Length: 213
Image: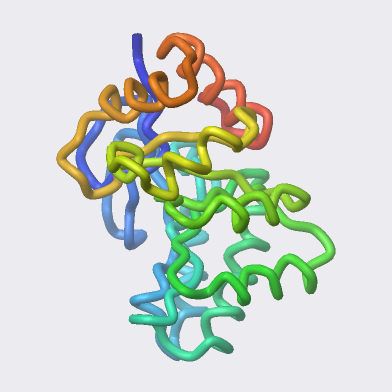
């Protein structure tokens, strides 16, 4: 049984989305492409235009990771502009955005209020307090859980138990874990078989993306 890994930085199989940071990288598997807030600068719009050359590549499954980081990123204004542009690109293609989010919840909320329509946004590596996740369920926000699911008492553990299953994904990100370990832990927490979770996340993806898995 192949398990879908929403977000990984490692070489991986067909059922994973590899995070690709530039348009010059090449991969024969599924990937995401976008401008991480750490690497935003005054020339981000030109960089984004170069990336858009990959728009018709069927292996381009998501835009990102992109989003907000108020610890290591540039000004909030720049981050808002770049995120909005990448949301628009995702909407044009009918695919989700994989979002990086560090201390920028208010910027996400501002974006939700200001844009008339949003593509599906998947908050990767979610490990925030449950009430934050619950507050976003009225928007097209989804949640991807990773290594923090294995930490007893973590926010990720607490939230996944109350998060609607049709908003859930799983990922390995930069960890050394295998995606099966993440699914197994989620199975214990949710008291659902791994097979049922595997089917659920594929259904979740195929409902929100024109590019199916």
